[in-house]
Amino acid sequence: MLIKVLLVAFFSLESSTIQHASVLCFSFSGIVPSLPVVGRIGKQAKHRQTSYEKLDNSKTLLWSSVPSWHDLEHEMGKTYRAPVPSCIDSVLQPATPKFSTDHPTLFRERHGWCPYSERVWLSLELLSVPYDTILIDNTGGPRPPYYSGGQTPQMKWPSGQQQGESMDLVQRLDSENQSFDFQMSNPEVKQAIAQFRSIFPSRARPSSRAAFLFQSNGEPLFRSTFEDTLLKTDQLLSESGGPFFTGEKFTAADIAWAPFLERYRYQLPCLHIGLCPDDQEKYPHLSAWYDAMDHNPEYACRVKGNSSSWRKVLLMAGFGNAGMVPPNIAENVQSLIREEDEQRNNINGKSGVDLDLWQKYAEPRPHVAPTPRAQVAQIISRNRDAILKDTLKQIHSKGDTIVDELPSTLEELDETMRELAEALLGGDDGTTLTNHSRRTVGAFASFLNNRMCVPRDMGAMPAASLQHLAWQLQTYN
Image (cartoon, rainbow, N blue to C red):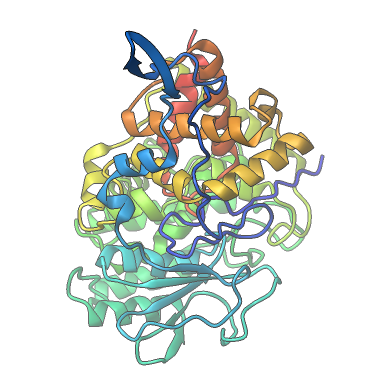
C-alpha cells in the first residue's frame, strides 16, 4: 500500500520574527487578537475556578477563568517579549528582504530535511552568534529571485558575498568566531571528515530527506551494506578513544557526521527490523557517540530531529525512493510505534526531558523559554491564528481521526488551545481538569503532536514535552 504523509509547516520554526510557515496548511502571518471571554463560560471552562466580584452580598459572574492570550503572554514573561531571530519562508514571502550587514544570513532547506543544511545550522547554534534564516524550497517549488541558485546551504555574509558548500561554511565560521573551537585546522579532524565519504554507501540514490538509504530502483540498500557502514563507523570511533570522532572533545568532524548518523538512527530500523545503530552491544562506540550528542545542548534542544518525524519523512513517496514506498517500511514503522507506546506505558510515560540541558541552551538566548513546555506554549501563542485555521480545516474535512474529539467552533477551539497553553506553562498534568475537558485538551495536544515535524517546527525536547502531556491527558482515568 502506497502511503503518502503530507508534512506541513506547522509552528514556523519557533524563532521567527516574521511568522511564516511552509507549504500545505499554515501561513503564520501574524498574531490574532485574543477572543473575548467576558460574559461567557465556554463548555471546557465550567470546571475551572471562576472569577467573581461581590456586589450587595451576592456574587456576580464577571468572566471565565480560562486565561486570555494577553494573560498567558504576560505569564510567559520576558522571553516571549524578547526579540527573536528572523526566519523567513521564501515560498510564502518571496519579496527581497533587507539583509543584515552585521551578521550572516543562512539559506537552508525549508523542511529541515537537508543534512548539509543541518551541518551549518548546528555550527551557528554552537557558536551562539546572531544570524538570520531564509528557508528555501529544494523540492522543485518556487524560489525567490534573490536566491543565487544551487542547493542548500548557502550563506550570505554581512559583506554581501554569498557562499555555498557546507563544510566550507563551517570552516569560515570557525575561523571568524572564537566562542567554540571546531578545530578545522587539526589534521585528525580533517581526516575524520574525509573518512565519511569512504565509509558511507557510495551507490545510494541522491536525496536530501532520505540520504544514503535507497538504491536507484527505489528499494532500500541491502542490510549488509548498512551493517558494514555501521561497523566501520564504530571502528573509527573506537580508534579515537571517543566518545567523539577525534576523542573527548566535540569538533567539526562530529558536525560533518551528525546529520547522517541522526537519520540512520531513526530510519534504518524502518528499513530493516532490528537494525539499530545505537545498539550498545553491536556498536558500543557508536552508541556512546549518540549518547554524547544527546548531551550537547544546541544539538539536543534545537537542531536534532526525532524518531516520529524522520519516519514521516521516510513514508513520503518520491524524492529518494523513486516515487514509491516499499510496503514493508509502513509495516515496520507501525511495529516500532507500538513498541514505543508499550515502553512509554511501562515507564509511566516519563518524558525523558533533561531540564538542566535545556537551561544550558536557553540561558544565552533571551527569546527561549525557561522550560521546554513553556517553549511549546510560546510557539502555540505566536502562531495561534494559523493553528486555529488549520485545525478547523482538519475538523471540517475529517483529515485526522483525533479531530472528532475537538470542539468545532472557533471560540471553543480557541478556549481549548488556551487551556493547553496554561497547562504547559503551569506544569499541569491535567488532573485539575474535568474528564470531558481533559479529553478535549488531550485530543488537541495529540493533534498538534501528530501535525508537527521536528526540528522544522520546534526542537526535539519541546516536542517530547508536548507528546508527554498528550500521553498524560489521554491515559488519565
